[in-house]
Image (cartoon, rainbow over all chains, first blue to last red; front, side, top):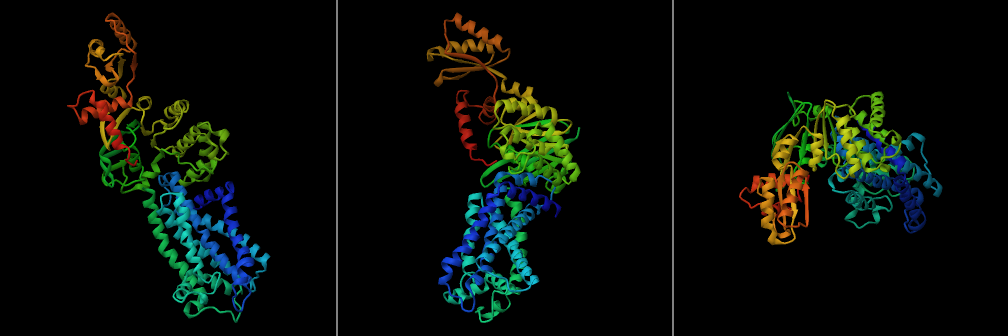
Length: 260
Length: 337
């Protein structure tokens, strides 16, 4: 754990010294908020709710998912530059590099979400619940983002260069985030896609956030079936399952990747 | 004296390529061993296996009496590694790099800070201590990386091509640093492509090629084996080759190597300038005016010509050895390190 913190601090120094990465990872979600609020939003009717209210949980979740791609890029970069060899020749914990990376990416994500939340408030999004519920929402968001970081870690450790990590880390996130209830109602999708969208971990997190932030008023169509009524539980289960599968996988990949 | 580093029959393959092919080496405690070889010979693979970064397919590896394969974490506590590509973080300052390494060796916060300051001072990086490493020159990065290997003053140190890519001046500086500050009672294994470097720094040299140790000895023994200095003559006309070969043999006492294509003859000599003067006089007497004449110090090329030439194709004509060597280089070009 202590080694993990040492590596986290090292990564945070990088954010401080090369702030471009943080700036650009912040600009993208702001762009999305503005685009969907003012460009696409008018064309996407969601019965029973104001689209800007509907949008923010979706965009937060999408942003946290895309933010996790940083983990793949950061690890691929470390592997390519040879600093991982240094780490592996030291008597430090084998998981420290991964713990440090995922932790610093989490903190990066917290900053991005904070900026985006302010942007959301500016376009008219509001949280209608109590402070603990609102905070629980952000907690769930960051838990899910942290879990996604470990998926991204596996990708970053499996590719052979930073350039590949840059595209491989992002590409699968497009179908994952768009094939969900983040921006549109699954009820409007082609029929075979609907169950996929409803069981999608992104959808369960988005729906849970809408509940926790009071952005899913009565009369709003939640979808059908078990996922639509157990969004919070399902999103927690998804996060736990992802962590359980991808943490050990990433650690074993780290050992192999570093000995290439 | 106990052996600080032992490798015995180590094999490591990458697909069809045998990066290490039954490699063995022993480094007595407190000595400096140079692992000399061309690109792709297996030097880096060897260092990576000894420093726990890579597992061999076969073989026994011990560092400080500890089995590297069975107890890698214990080995990591007693070694320092400075790799081929300076493994320092570009975005951290020199001080932050060293402090981080100290923390990861678990020597405690206060001690890590103290060591970082000491090492920056020792390696003349104090002025640049708080600057991001990406602003450092190549030589400074190497020095910092080397300092990183010494944070705990480990008893066993591995340096993988510590001067490759440095300009001659920085290389000289590195040699002094390694001689004075790195090797103070520690056991040191360093890899290099330069015979001169091995000569300057090492007690013993192992020549490695195609994953095998093909020669071992002190620098002097090895140079004797290689032939030390060679006298090279290039003549203007092929008709002069014969007479010059005879004269060259007289001063060298060895049969010269003749490369008819470029009209160049060479033979091992001892005695330096004196022999050169003697040959010039004899050429003058014979009325031959060479295009070029000079003493050529033994290089790694010569070592390989000589060592691998004898080892792999003893029946080959000397003139054919050059072609043979080129063939070998192309062969080994794709071997991952």
